[in-house]
Length: 168
Image (tube, rainbow, N blue to C red):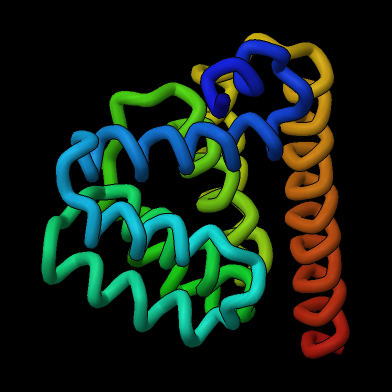
């Protein structure tokens, strides 16, 4: 079912959501471990709070580790505005999957942006372009890069004016 939905290519967010489920249920469970499968299905249930999801991810990790667990933790940390933690989780994860590489770079870019590390954000947004060919997605990434450049320029202008005022 998820593979059929993914082939429709509805949007990058939906594609990512589908891909996460495919990886979680196929790669992590190998169709064998029913306990792990049930736990993963439970994770994707919308009724769980973030703290319950974090606890569940820790339980899953005791059974079997997969880089997707850190990716999911990073998404939760980002939602909770814990951008440093999101970066930490993302930096220790790696994927062969292009969609997850794209998602990782975008989330790193957005996390650095929120922390006002605009040059680092630009680096990750540029990197994300290696993993997509969708014109609307490319435009969205370019918008993020433009936003970073604007904020970086504003910050330099403010710093220049502050130092000018201090000299007077």
